[in-house]
Length: 462
Image (cartoon, rainbow, N blue to C red; front, side, top):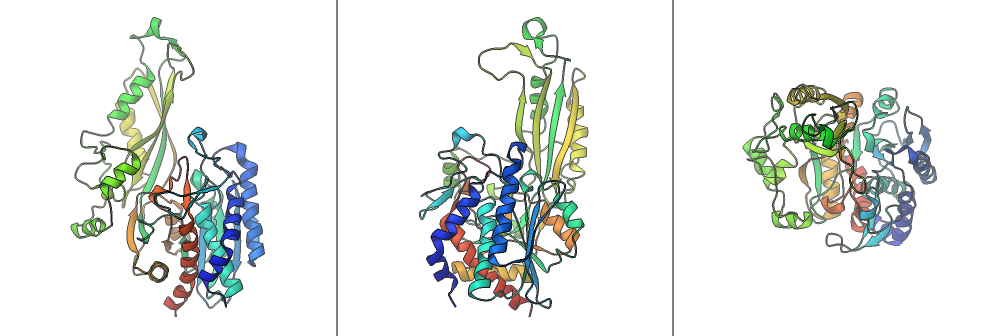
């Protein structure tokens, strides 16, 4: 039987070519103009599942984009692993900032990926990481033995908040029944510092609208006499945080779980070079809530950020107007035990109070998700840690992530199983940004590690 490293060495180019074909599909779920491509990516995954020998492979219809399902049940008495991933990607905009075509993958060396990285939209988030799982199971089926039952659920709406996933999961409890869920949509500290994510922040994502006059007005004739919605909106946003970068919404911190000094000391053990961090981002100084380190600010503390703001005239030349409306998109990352259903309510109440009577305010709650913590003493975590130690030669660090994966608490609520967040990306991979990339080392090392996970998980359950 061919061992995994020999297999990867011999088939490296083929495995890259397969991923490249998937990356060429612009499966942007946020833009209806790419609807055909999103469905095309689902078909690609379905065909791969069939070729690798999975059973009951199907395109599962939802109110939105389809979910691709496939399984291999070796023995009902064996434990079952559910693999989750997504085939949709973020928009590539702004296109002009890409150094190469976002949907024509190229390999380039970087400081963090000296062996080369795959530059393409979705390379790291999440096509490259999701595809590792398919390859790992394919290897086990054809070259060794699959020691547990495996089910795959690959969706196409993660980048727009997975609006159809709860609908699907609620209707398929028996089909999706499992002992553990494994997800690779997170990252490591560095290529020589493996890690398993044990905590995720939640999310509340809102859009605000400020309306002044019932039409755009001449700024000379009306300026100084009528409220300018853009001016008002920026003043309102400025009041959402104070000089200590503390969020000012009344009640916002009431349910925030404060970590103990011992827990904060554990976070401080994570290797972190502040000067390199600033250099990588091209900034002179970090910025955030007073009293917390950079690692803490980006993982265990709640945040409020304006993700976009617009209104008025932004075309070529001058157009002197007072705009009728101004808008902003605002996200708040939440920590245990904040509630993503309650936070938008207190935000709306406070934000509306900040507005003068000269304007009207609307707040739309777009989507959100709960924070999540996974225990490090579970069989799934222990199996993942052993798999990483075997692949990397060292114990992985348990880390908190500042990102949000709203489907993880959904899975626990609906299916009653824990999720293991075993990702292989790096912070420098520029996910959601121009020039997103994923290391070839990470892609191949991920396949290797995942193949080990199944053996160790089977042993943990004996």
